Length: 89
Image (tube, rainbow, N blue to C red):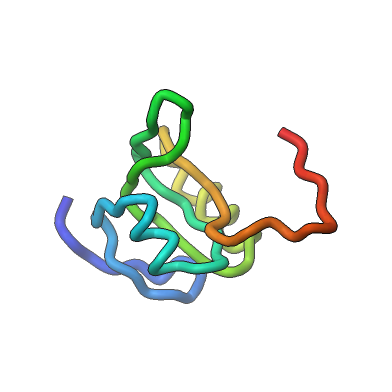
């Protein structure tokens, strides 16, 4: 896939760039990210993926996922969860 830009969530970023998990966390701190075709390890932790969207507001990235309808994707927050929140899986 060639490099192009997207304005989903009113933020511009390169499309088609495969990033490592560490690069994603470093470039987009405390944001929600949507990755296409994520690669994961044997414990299902994301190793890398193609950036589809990122934004501090979860709803913006969730809306992008609904519009794009990727077949295989990962959606996660790059920051630490708040201490006063219970996360149910």
